[in-house]
Amino acid sequence: MSQTDRKIGFIGLGIMGKPAAKNLVEADYELLVNDVRDDPVEELEAHGAEARATPREVAADSDVVITFLPEGKHVRQVALGEDGIIEGIDAGQVCIDMSTIGPRAIREVAEEFEAAGVEIIDAPVSGSEEGSKDAWMSIMIGGDEETVEDHRELFEVMGGNVVRVGGTGAGQVAKVCNNMIAAAEMTSLAEALVFAEKAGIDQGNLVDAISGGAAQTWALDTRAEDMIAGEFEPGFFASYMYKDLRIATRDGEEYGVPQLITSTNHELYKSLEEQGRGDLDFAGIMTLYEDLAGLD
Image 1 (cartoon, helix red, strand yellow):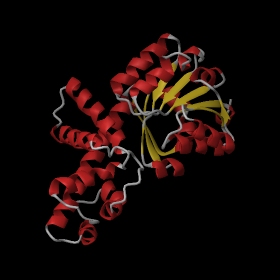
Image 2 (cartoon, rainbow, N blue to C red):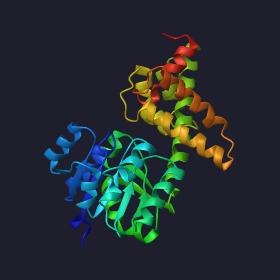
Image 3 (tube, rainbow, N blue to C red):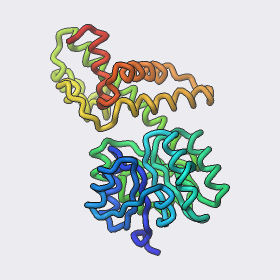
Image 4 (cartoon, rainbow, N blue to C red):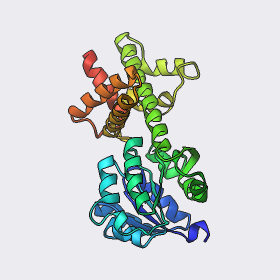
């Protein structure tokens, strides 16, 4: 069976999942989709996919099932709950979870699936909505090496940097590390921009001055201009970063890892969430720093 002859089930059509699903349709995969919301399902149907009413039906009619969901509780419900994947999937099939839920959570789901003869690959992603649309996001993979290679073409349709990190859960470990670094970049940039404003320096001139130097980061390249303009249209929700930092601090405690920076960033994003700003891009942490500094 060629890669595109496989029927692909795709559950979760959110800010990252929907464009990834569209890329699979455009690559001539037969796609069966499901989401709790009608609008993205209808949009994918108009794009050439077919809809199924439940995760169980998606699994029963697919050769491979992909989930792309917000949190661990959603993955557990879709995978193991009533009308879930496990009720429709056959032994010998593969489920690929592209959500960010942490290594402990995916290993718990994998244990249930393996008991039913189903193999799971964890493949969380890093990249904005634009990265998902343009298929250049990074995909960090945990799973059996042979199984991962058998599905590599599928991953490469959705992402530009596809790396198997190790066995089950390794992709989640890599994603947690990725977001620890991304959060540190973003809060440091927000802090520096507020410092510049309070010190009477034009923020745009600051960015021009430090670009290309030791302070060059992904955050500086992709978010500084919008942060200065006060524009925080979400490419990655602040509430998602808060969720991911909860995973990082929880698992860091379990592993005995010192997390002085990550724990502080967790508290900053918690405060942003509690102020009702979780629907901003995670660069919206700038607004919290401005409040703390007494800036309008």
